[in-house]
Length: 133
Image (tube, rainbow, N blue to C red; front, side):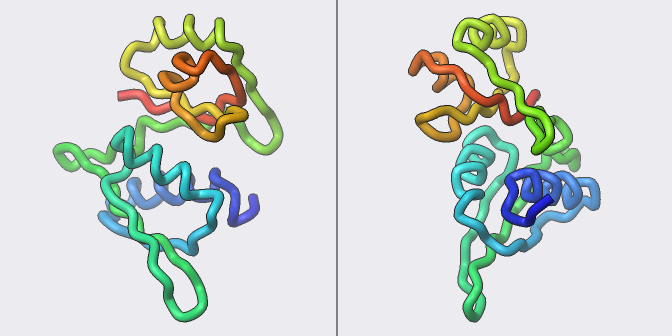
């Protein structure tokens, strides 16, 4: 798996939450910015800081915990480099009704958005993963 892959970022978030790390640092890639923004918005991570160290950009990520339990345990990757799952607008509405408190990440022509935004814009797309509370 290439280091610039969003799966690399997600796997490191899961690994560090399993180790109960409060904060960790990774090299920053521009591809990750949209993921970091959405992860912060849905509460998967608490904060992230992008800083320049010598000639390289790094990102420092602070994880979210609730009563000493990491919230990243509830994130699941669906699309991997070897298999892709596309979801239509109709199917997305049905799935959203069945899973009330879950948040699905979808890659569309409008960029990376949550399933609520995809329903509002009436678009389907590539199902990246989901976060359930």
